Length: 338
Ligand code: TRP
Image 1 (spheres, rainbow, N blue to C red):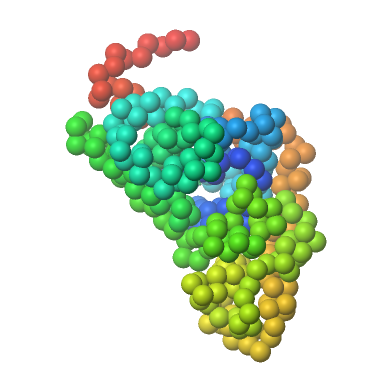
Image 2: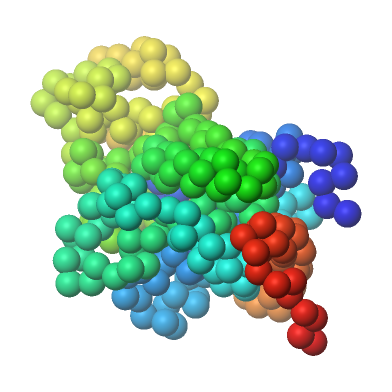
């Protein structure tokens, strides 16, 4: 029986649209991991969310498996967490449809991510992009989730999830638990190294984005080229010194040091020294993860075993919620089909 100790539940996911970035690691996975002992933990590879943009099918498939390997390599122990691939659990699509009918056109139109993405992909503003937050709400609500650890940019999506759940509960009684977004204290929003006013994203720029697959050499090179300023002082100022503030966040996330401590450590030293230090710390932290992921990726049977067991467990939990919701809205009880 899952959740026998009645731990609170954490649920989160990342889209397998590309290789995992340093931003996803520091802004999400590292934070998830820190809460695995305390929470019943469910982590998803959200492949269904990925297809709102056109992707190469073979790449999507290999990214999804690779992402699972990186989840495990980064320390999400499959013995302690449920790890699965979203498209393997039909309940996500089932609940998303119902929730679509309890979500307003107006509220979806106001979502920042929809506005940004539809401006960026003006030739493909599909309905999936528009209802993306509804599928995400289904992901979260299916598992009686208490907390959703996410990066800053996803907070609005957890808020609309609460609004949808509240609207549904007001009609049918206490069906859904209201989830709370949890942002990491440091590293919630890792920015691009080349354009530090933009989120670190593989699709936006290659040079400013560190991916976990990058070799040490590539990582060091990207840090050396990171955009800074002409002030020459390692001091935390996320408005005037965005580049340095971002490097300090990365350094702080890996070292646990405060911004003041970092300023003192690099007092009187040039940016070159600081950038190299951030690069080395990043390499040291990521190298074992990359090596373990590569090892796991050679054992496809093991990965298949993990995602199959994860999907079976997730489907068991999720189908209970779907049954409850279907009953509430007035669907005839599902017969056993096979
Ligand atoms: N929208 C999230 C992102 O782009 C990914 C996601 C999908 C997610 N479903 C989720 C995150 C449920 C947390 C919970 O990062």
